[in-house]
Length: 511
Image 1: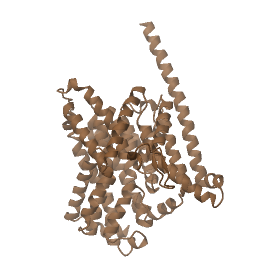
Image 2: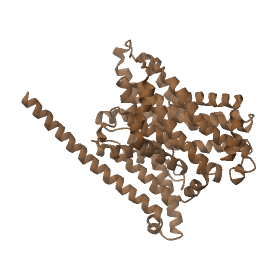
Image 3: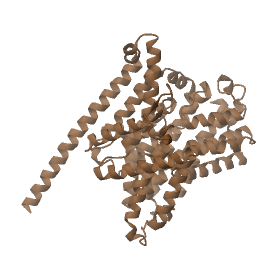
Image 4: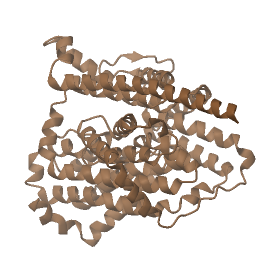
């Protein structure tokens, strides 16, 4: 703590505060652009930090990382297109709120929840770096495999009233994740065309499954292209939203804890944290059917969790050179450019750089919140754009975002192919979120299983390696409980729907 107070004045100089301001505004812009993920935003800026002093360069990268994760919710709420994978769960309630004329409330909820989760994550980075790093080191291939399996069980809870359709979508996502060459064995699977050699990247998949169907819907509504959607700016709404969060204490606690833990675990990422927190909050609620209809608590759960992963992802990075997320891996490049090697010496010999960076990650949460709230007041600019201009602009961004991932038109073709497939699935009532979750978690589950199998075959055997050990057994228990609760919730949902229908029929008969 003394070191933090010692180096705090170094961060509060005008030049460093200006860097934080620019990074926060730029991160919101990058995050809101479909296809420009936080990882891509940081990667684009790393070369520009080469000639910058170490402290401002790391403050810039940290601020962009923080704001880009939260900024992805802007397009998720307004357009039903996640600006970043971390915002997948946010659109489940955020977009319905926008359609009800509550876009400003949804965005205020997003940024205040992100602030809470981000602050908790930053405090974990400040106070829990050594113990959390030791905890992360306990996760070998078997533990990481069961962690991803636990994430896969979330699929069953994402589609109340349509669990089988959700499971089908998740299974399809896992199958799509197998396409391409294996990272472990190098073996090619399901490569029917050369464009599939590298597999299906998450950004083109995300854009194809969410954005393309949305653009087609805009085109179908072309007969109302000259109508304007009126968004009324409500004064005093921010105070009401903040007061609402007093009743979301359980949701904020679940989101913050899950986000912090998943942030430390290498490879999981903010998208997994957001979906897991949304699923767990929904399962614990007395009326889970309200989620997905425009409930701000669903937005709160997702955004609190995904921003809580940001700072903890730097814990194993700074201490063990193990990035907790893809974006943290890019941050590692920023450290190496400045001649900084992660490890104990980072907190001793170069403490004058490390501690200002940690302080900057904490302060960046407040800059993100301030500029996010300011941007939320101008959502009517996006909402009032005529459809014929909107779908043209969004489609250009979709093509640009998909192409930029690997500078390949193959990704653009994949994006359009998945978009066409999702159009059919929407007609059949199959949701897109489980498909995306399967694509995200499939490679993680496969890689860790294959690595674990190689270790097991040379040591204790497959069964003993994957099913022994306290941590493995706890994770297996969580998987079983998650599935059991999803089945119980589905039965309860069906009974309530049946009772509601009977009540409506009785009222109609009496009338």
